[in-house]
Image (tube, rainbow, N blue to C red; front, side, top):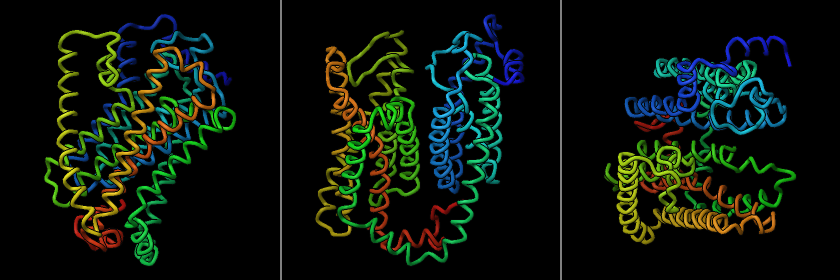
Length: 419
């Protein structure tokens, strides 16, 4: 390992005798900065509707950066400081390879892409400052070397630059792509696309499960892996598209309920309910129930999500039945049905694995069956936001048959342009 890297780490890190105040600040930044950046971006989404499509693209590129960073780290295999005994593990962290830093890769990618847009430069500079502070914090608490953070920043800059170049190229080609857009519109409006898409995800899940753990590592689908990160980003993108393209005949109350449900699914997938409340209401687990205010907050959040889900279920049932009677709404109706099948299947697999684990039976199952159950659950959860986005597009094309092409050439007022 480079001498300069070790010297910089010794200079920056808290080591075995950290300052208590700095350690508290560093721990908060290391674990909470991601949510602070997400809050800043959410503020931009609500305050500047014109930038929502660009922010959606930024989030998709951020998911790609996370995937690339994790794959590079796995290939390089560089240890973290606490794995070498150079510092205690001041926060709970897995013993995974750390070069490049995934936090740095994602945060710098987002920061550079936001600053490239004049409308979002202030938010971008705030995220950039947070990325630098987070890099220092993760070095201080002993989970990264300075080289890890620097490599993540360089990787983020490269991915952001490549993404911006691709976006600019797409904007230049957009006006000359009318035949291709017509073909794409026809395929998206296909009556069975949602069901075919669900079948494709299921086949991919089977292939993934059969190739674990030899060809594909289980980390690809485990918590914090590539599939889960992509799922979380797509849920946020789907929620923003609901606000951007409110389905026809839906009130803002309906759109708000759908956003709450999508974000709740994302939070559950990320185990945010356990991190915040130390309880799992869906599986009736309360391993370390805290004070009454914590329980009250958990009940309030769960009640809000339940109310939104009930409202949405009633509305979707009425809309779905009437949609099947009209030819132009049938693709969206079948996509909604595919979404329901994927949701029930993924939820059932999650519950089944939890029951088997509680009964100490999961480890007695054949490894292939365990990997198939895991990959099927995670890949179907990835399919949920994809099907939600597809359903929204099909609703818009059912209302405006040329909607997709109009938005692509920018002639439709209020269209989500690439930026």
